Image (cartoon, rainbow, N blue to C red):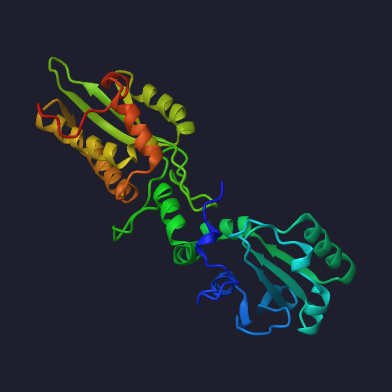
Length: 329
């Protein structure tokens, strides 16, 4: 499903004062992805050229510079594809501007006929061809930090909605090491190509009951990928046969409301003297809360609101959560 609404960019054929926005967007897009702008957008007769850009390719024998003719077609408001009749005399336009390649920069998709025509020219005339359609533009923008800044400028409404559902860690800590799996030592929250983060892991507590008391000592805390949970658990059961473990799902713990409830529950148990922490366990828990805090300093996504509603309906022994400020606390 498309994320960015290209209709947020004004139509190109209505003299509103903003009719150049799509060409300006194309200029900014190509520039942040490494193209040099040789001729920016301008009004008036353009000879079939909206922008002239240059790409520098570095190889073993040196640098190769390729000039591209850029043709911008903004049809998002009508929803029509870019047809053959919208791109006439492509070869003549490329050659007349002394270019080696043609870039179609479109807010929708090229028609099948146009795609076939461009592919044919690439094969028979040996000119470079590239098409940036709406899907490719969106993918490139959202998988790149500079692209995200550009998307926020040109698509403020749809980008804000996407950003709320795909939050990034808040930059509120001066120093952070991140959360590494205690077993494989790889990042627990890797960033994916689309710019979102993957959350898959468990926070594990190891505890042991003290003899002749009702106090439980938590002697170790660590965090692992779900796939690494069992191998590390087996090692601990050999070392500490009298101990037992409990766990929290990191996908749930990174929900801001659950994080706050979890932190408060730790304080409650310490206050009531129900548990004790070894210095090692407490230090690790503090590190965990510190490192997770940038991921929860934000609003809830809709999926997290749904998860929270589900969890609130479960009894505590099945993983349900209580209200943060119960009247009887």
